[in-house]
Image (cartoon, rainbow, N blue to C red):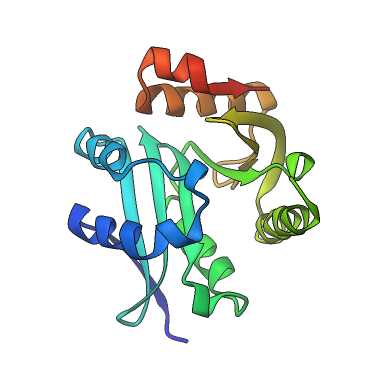
Length: 189
């Protein structure tokens, strides 16, 4: 393994990753249309990052951003590279890249709403990964377009209170969605 590098993707590169990998890595109900990503990027409210080991893509991170507040919208290691440490290395590299952020939030599917034992095991595995990598379970939960999440924080600038996490989380989504769409599809607890 080489040293990882993070590179901001062009929209063409981001769309290629979306088509080739994201459609397989994320359930359909969690994947927003690429047009929304493109529009948010054009407004300066989104960043698509490719994670490289040497010249080879090993993962990606797509983030909603508002000023110095970030939400890790999509994050994955390429399927044939999972389970050998890339996820933690990429998350650490993201922590360095966004060290000056005011808040860095992450959504992870809420295990309490798993449909079956397999889904429960997968959700618990993801939560363990994030917690082991230094993220904090904030105690904040959200329902986003019908998908239940726990909101985690990578405490780059220190841990925030639940009220502060809720406020940042709502601000990030309100920056990305129209008011009617936000009101219909986002509930934060």
